[in-house]
Image 1 (spheres, rainbow, N blue to C red):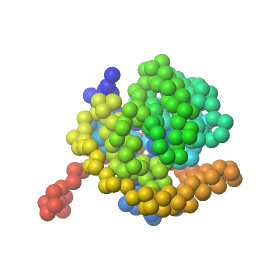
Image 2 (cartoon, rainbow, N blue to C red):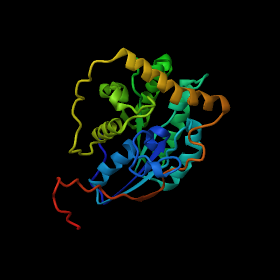
Image 3 (cartoon, one colour):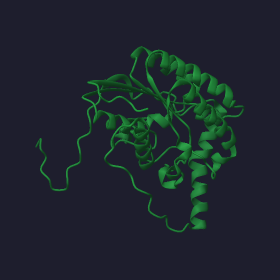
Image 4 (cartoon, helix red, strand yellow):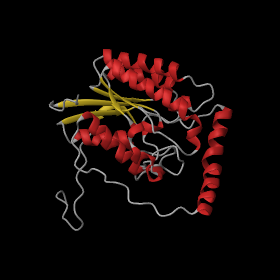
Length: 277
């Protein structure tokens, strides 16, 4: 099953949280905004799509910090109104991180949303997460694994594409992750965008190779880095949970409507003349 690219126009909407918003992969102008401006795998995937069809209309409704119920309540109706040809849907990870999370109930809510999208005629792409065996995420990996198995079943029952990050060993490399250890780095987002293309049958010319070997770890430097991470990221995250705040408070979707997206121009070799200069 591959995406039909033999059409004059294709529309794509991305739904979700910080994963799909692209946090960790800033655009050059990101520092100029109060909440940053991020590229991420969805924008990168959309650029690959735009290179294959005469016209791509793209919307990205994702907002960091959103729970699954918020994505369903706030983003799903807008996506249904747009009636896009393709939807990527990733949500629920923020829920599983919270106490009392029920992976089965989350999967039921996800499936209801997927059925509405499929009933409206959209192709849907779902995602599992990464198989964390180390770090702070490992303490809840059992709940995440149960949720991801449910997502596999939802994809199978509803004829969805599935991007299985659990099988992507390259995402276990620390270089695939931002300094907050929760969001992917630019290179992590790039590699995931390529994987999404592979799952949907979208041609990609620039494929990443294997990671080069890491230098030997320095235990003292690692302890200092762990302390810095806890101070700068873990403690504020816990503070937001205790006070009911979210990183997505006052953040709006970066592409709230379907709008044309031009394929990115290939980078010219150093010293080459600009054809538009």
